[in-house]
Structures are given as C-alpha cells and as structure tokens.
Length: 250
Image (cartoon, rainbow, N blue to C red; front, top):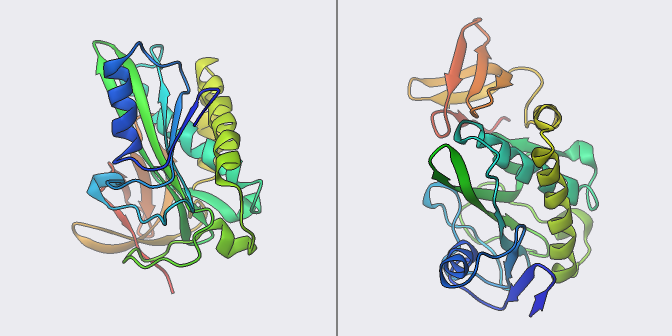
C-alpha cells in the first residue's frame, strides 16, 4: 500500500535496505519518503543489536533525507532531529516529562526503552548526500521475550491498542517538522530541545567506561555528538558513542 510519501510493506528484510535499493533502482525518491513494514526479518539496531518487534504490532520504518546543506561535521544534528521528532510523537500518548533521550538517540519512557534509532549518513565531498533514519517504536506489543533489559511499549503504558498505520503518518509529520527546523538553520533550538530532554540530565548518576564504574553528571553534548561528563571528583571526561555505558540504578 502506498500513501503520499509513505510505502507500507507487510514484510521486508530491512526497511533501511529497501529504501537504499529504491534509490539505486529508480529516480531519487522524494525527501521524507517513508518505508514502513509490518515485520522486518533482519531488523537491527545500533552496532548489530537485534530489535525485537512482534509482527504488525509496532512501528518499524525508515525515512530518507537529502541534507546537502549540512556539513559532515554537523551530522549529529540529524540524530537529534529524528530523536526529537520521536519524542514529539510519543508525547501524544505519554506525558512529555516521562520521555527522554538517552544519548545519543535512544528514546526512553522513565527508565525503560521505548524507541531505537539507527542513522546512516552517506557523505560525498564536503556535504551529506543523503541520510536514512531507521526507527523502531514499541506501540502495541504486550510482552517482550528477548534479552533486552528494559523494553516498554505504549500499550504497556496506556493499556490501549493503536492503529499503527495512522501512527506512521503522524510520526512522519513530527520528524519532518523537526527536519524543517534543521533546514531553516535553527540548530540552536534543536540543540537546546535535545539537551533539555536528555536522560539523566540532572544530578550525578552511575556510568562505566574501560576503567570501571564512576559517578558523573552530564555537562554538555558537543556539536559533534561527543558527551561531556564531570565526575563527582571534579574530573571532566569526553566520550564518543560506545565509549561509556549508562549503569542501571537501584
């Protein structure tokens, strides 16, 4: 089924791969084209993590952008705008104050993961030629059988079942609205909104790196996406993705 800017598939190996093949086999699809699948046979998250999703229960989709005006050094803004779009969408179902973004771009409801995002940027010269954002959001799933430590769905939060196709159209609008902010050079607003929604933004919390566990607070996230922490001993540390781990707290 095809609606304006949205392709609905019953099953596919990966919506990211399908969208990439669409770009290779046809004229360039329009910006903000979305491919949404009822089930992905090879769906994945960051660093080859498997994304558990019951068939036809959740939102699993990819979106295409041509952010040619964004420098490769600014590509983290694309991650911010997608995660903020997901938060905007989920705020229609949950209280905004219960939603946060776990650096770099997982979306949390309280201390549980409700959405995951995988960004693929394709760089040509001094610009980003295109971006594919793969997103998984737990909507109607009632039980999680995998080994993920803390998943949650909208159904588990509200006790209600939702029309997944209608939800796909709604979140496309939310993400496109955030993308428009980026195109209008409103990077400062995106960065401000992102920082305000950061998971564990306030106070000291437990982290772990290659040297062991420590307590720290978030100071900032650089334009490049580097996370800045200050330990409870007053030491300032910088981390790229996967160099530091959030630890669950009692």
